Image 1 (tube, helix red, strand yellow):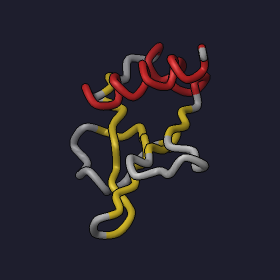
Image 2 (cartoon, rainbow, N blue to C red; image 1 turned 90 degrees about the vertical axis):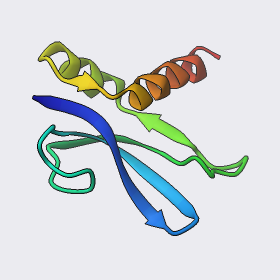
Image 3 (tube, helix red, strand yellow; image 1 turned 45 degrees about the horizontal axis):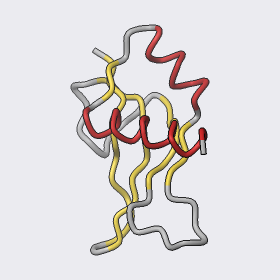
Image 4 (cartoon, rainbow, N blue to C red; image 1 turned 135 degrees about the vertical axis):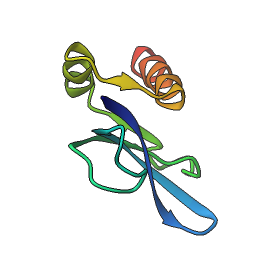
Length: 84
């Protein structure tokens, strides 16, 4: 099964996550199919904290990819940002 989930990057104490599409059997930071965006939980006021390619997200969901609960929360957060 194909899933949309987070892949951790950054250094100790400064996390940075890529939002990726990957096979469910592959480890968290391993091989992935496509990078859809990023999430930076420690972004300062002037920095962009979240970006998701909505067109690619819609495509992957249409072909059956399932998002993790955390990514679902981030998708809703990104929709609120675009609406405001």
